[in-house]
Length: 495
Image (cartoon, rainbow, N blue to C red; front, side, top):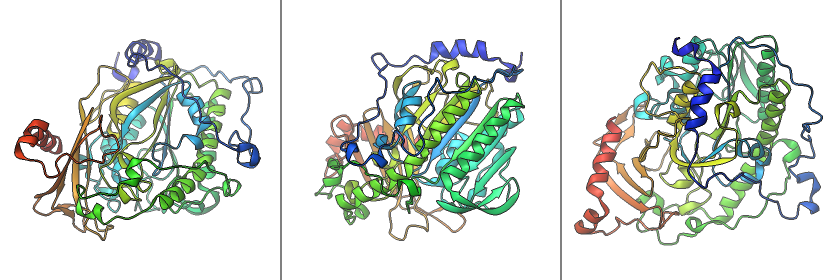
C-alpha cells in the first residue's frame, strides 16, 4: 500500500499513541470571565448577535459513505493576533481548547506577514523559501507548498481570504480547486479574485470568507474526497475595523505587563532605545484587535456547527493560529518585527478526535510555523517530497531543543531596525543583529557584520528585561555558553 493510500483507522492508531502530551498537562481551557458584562449585555460574547446552536438542536448528521478515510483539514489563520487574546475567543477555546491540544510555546519563524505565510505553506524557514519581505510573493516555489502536495494526492483544496501580500489579484493561486482571494486585504467591501473573476464583494471580510468556506465544506455532501480549506482573515491587523455589531464592544481593562513598563533600555538595541509607545497606546491597540477577533470567534462557531451537521467533527483536523504576534507597548514598541516574545509567540490550537487530538491537553514543546505543513502531510499519510525545516506535531518523538526565528530589514521600514536572527531554546534566547538589509528585489545585501547581541534567561526573565550580554565580560560570556550558541545560530541560518 502506498503512502497516499494509507487509511484513517491505521493512521489513527499510530497518532493516538504518539499524541500523549507532557504529564500533568491535561487541563481543559476555560474562557475567561468578563467583568461587568451585566452592564453591557450587547457585548456579552456568548453571543447575543448570533447564538450558538445547541447539540440537541443540531440537525441529524449527514453520513455519506466515504471512499477515502483520510481526514479533512481546516486551517484558520488570523493576522497579527498575539497571545493573551482569549477574551475574544471563548467559542474557539471551548471547541479546540476543550477538545484538542493547545500548543503553549508556538512561534512565528518570521514576524512578518508574507514570510510567515510562506513558511506555513512550505514548512521551510524564510531563508530557504526566499520570501523575505511582503513585496515579493513570487519568490515562493509553488512546488514546495502543502496545498500542491494535498491537491495532487486527491484532496479538494480551497483558499479563502488573504494569500500573500502583493500577490497580483488577477493571478489565480496555484493548486487550489476553489478560492476567494482578497488582495489588497480590507475589512469592508473588499477586492477579490473569485475563482478567476476579479470583483468587489460587499460585506465584512471575516463574514464573506467564512460564508464561502462554509459553502466549500458543504460540498462534501456530494463530493466524497477529503478536503483542505485554508481560511485567512484580515483580523486582527491594523487599521482595525470591527464588524459593526461589535464596534462598541466593551473590552476588559488591561494593566500591561512588566515589559511595557521597562524604563531602562540601555541594554536594548539602538532602535528600541528610541521607541516610546506607551501603555495607553498598547491598551488602545489591544482593544481594537479584540473587537475584530469577536467575528473570527463567530466564524469558528459556525465552522464547528457545519462539521457537526455533516458528521465530520471527528475526522477533521482543525488548526487555528496567527501569522505572528504583536507588541502592545512592550519595550516601548507597538509593532511586530522584533525578536521578543509578544512579537514571536502566537496562539496555536489543534483538534482531531479521530487522530488522538480530541481531549483537552496542553503541549509545551517548542513549536513553530514550519511544523504546520509537515503536520498536515502526516495526517494525510503523505511523505514529504520537498525539503522541510519543520516536523509533524502528531509524533511526540519530535521534540526539538531549539528553533530559529529571523527577520530582514526591508524598505518598508524607514528607521534602521537591522536584520536579526535568534536562537530560541527551551529556557534561553540568543539574538544577533546584522549589518544587512534587503535590496529592491527582496534579496539580502550588506556585510553581515554583527552589530548587537542579546541573551535572555527566559525562565528567570520571561519578559526579557535584562540582556545578560550588556556589559558582560569575556568570562561571563563563556559561563553563559555564548560561543556555542553563536555557532548553533550560525548553523541554523545555514541549514
